[in-house]
Image (cartoon, rainbow, N blue to C red; front, top):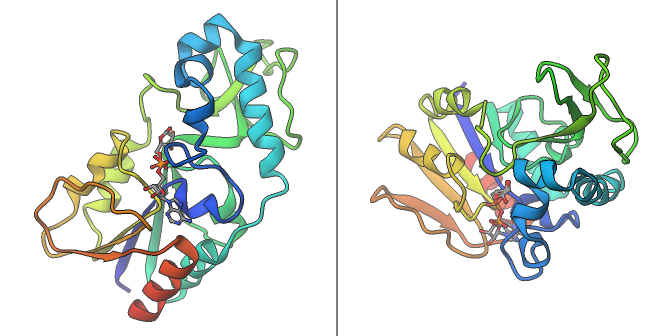
Length: 226
Ligand code: APR
């Protein structure tokens, strides 16, 4: 089976009602990243950080995958499919995708603040400072905050380096190291970008742009590939 590798960003979840970050109405238009999504923010005002993620987690419990997620899941029948996502939602998994690597963490998980190996699934949307790990320390969102290392990046690079086909869907390619994954794609690999806009790609390789929203673009890609 050919190896299909997909890098997904907030755009694939937009049609499921989840806000992107840098579009019109994006989250970073309303919130200051350094006030809600950084280690400094956590140290300064952990309650505000919990509030920011609780609001997003509460919304996520009611969100469903859209056709973009579903077409991607369907491609598992024809390809050895690896999804590398920048998203912290669980919509790829809800759509049935079985091989999902979350580069930036997962909204529905929490982590101990004294032992990073202690990670817990959250059954409820609200996380407060009263919630502690088995060692008694407060739980934090299991999210990679700005300034923290992306612990899965080497695993992602190894996956990308073996791709026969590489697809970027719904990412502005603004955030590193995720955006640098494009540098690890083998020369002979076919590359597709699905996005109503055209993210800037610092590469002279031949790219097929599908300038559509994810639900339409993934259907077109499905027709091209299956
Ligand atoms: N279908 C496909 N793409 C879409 C859609 C849609 N319906 N709507 C918007 N897009 C595209 C936008 O054109 C843009 O290129 O999705 C991209 C969204 O870009 P960002 O908001 O920057 O999201 P993303 O690239 O995932 O951000 C990366 O930044 O803040 C951090 O950790 C956060 O994981 C996030 C990272």
